[in-house]
Length: 48
Image (cartoon, rainbow, N blue to C red; front, side, top):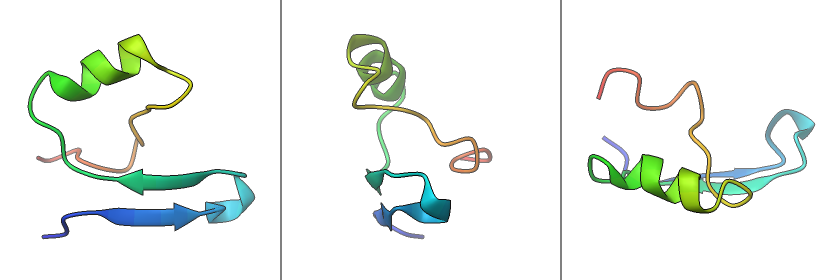
């Protein structure tokens, strides 16, 4: 299991990102409060 993943311009998307686990409810709260900073990658965390 990984603690964090880093992405630098993955597939030329222009983003530098760090993906870390968040407690239940925290991820959606962060995205709602600051969608320009936080997102949920569609390919991460699908199965817990």
